[in-house]
Image 1: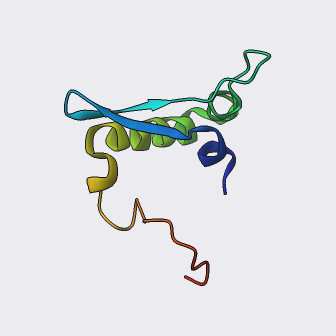
Image 2: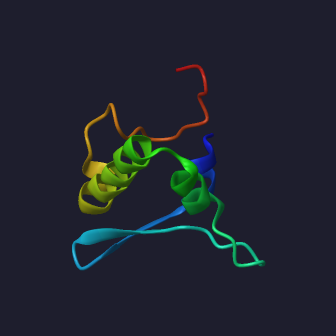
Image 3: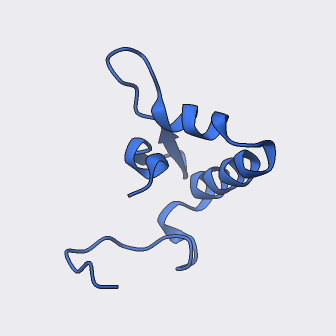
Length: 75
């Protein structure tokens, strides 16, 4: 589990699009957003673009981007 996926745990559909909410800790920190903000501009832009695609397509994205989680951790 990456730092980003650990704290971007809420994906739900609203008006045909998905919403992605960063988890906020009791002290009001958002570790996933802080992680993205700590990256160089190019890396942060790539992650933000991926999150935008995830917002638009959700679980309909191609397999190389999204994979259904199962109890089988071998693959």
